Image (cartoon, rainbow, N blue to C red; front, side, top):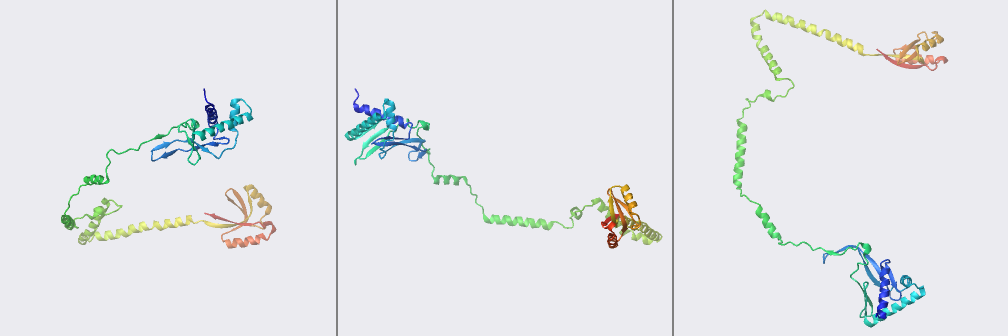
Amino acid sequence: MRSPYLCVMLRIIRHIEQLLSVHDCVIIPGFGGFVLQVTPTWYKADEHRFEPLHKELVFNETLQHNDGLLVESYRQAEATDYRTAYQWVQADVAELKAQLSREGKVEMTPIGVFRRGEEGQLIFEASRDGDWLNASMFGLPAFSVEPLVLEHPVSVEEEKKERRQDVYYIPVNRRLVHWVAAAVVAIVVFLSASTSVEEVNRAAYTASFVPTEMLNASKQKTEQEAVKPIPRVAEPEVVPSFVTEEPKAEKKIEKPAPKQEVIQATEATPQKRYYIVIASLASREQAEQFMAGVGRKDCPKMAVLQTKGKYRVYADRFSDKVAAEKYQQILRKNPKYKDAWLFTWASK
């Protein structure tokens, strides 16, 4: 047969456990409140331990008001009214306090343990088995990872010795190096002095756009011309015939050149004309009808100029722009030709 105390403890523990699985804060009226705190993932370096995201249960003795959660849980479980459920909660809390004052310790598995301190303060130690609280946190357990340890640690001095053993030093005599350098310089000077400048073929180092065959041919011609005057002194008959033929060839070559230049210059220069236009029409028939209506009394030199698909009737044309502008001013005094304008056209 169970004792009344055991039945009371089992009942209140069962209700608190159910409420903490749903709510983050459950208050025991007149005793204190349980609060769930979320602790993020962290690493404990001294133990090499990784703690996953989990909830921790703490107790706050100052929370002693009635929030209604525990009373409502009693009412639903016992199928009674709120007043009766509240009386049962008060009775269970009174029994909990009496047990704590008699024995100084109350175990509430799996929630934790309550103790009275030396100064009478209430101390709560949460149970280490908190898996029932971390169901919503994926239930990940904590784990430890031991760091790697070298079986044969190598000191810094040993590493330096190994590096020094890999480097090989070859002793070199500085005097020998100077002698070798002096010998090399002497050989270079001797080779440069022994090379004859006269033996260098200058034609091979000449940069030109003319082939070497043409250069050789011109060189042979100049040599022949330099040699020819000697036999000419012995044969006087050849000299006058050679002198008389050269000026004739020069006269025939020089005469046509200036004529071609003069003809090209006269053909390329266009001549500007200045027309005093009195009408611009789309067809020649319209231009002739306009001229017939105007008559040649006022404009005796009236004619038609066709340019770029247009037929312009002009009163007169001039080769001098100043004369054309003067005539334009005189013609505009007549109301019929007040819109006369100056048109410039370059004819070839």
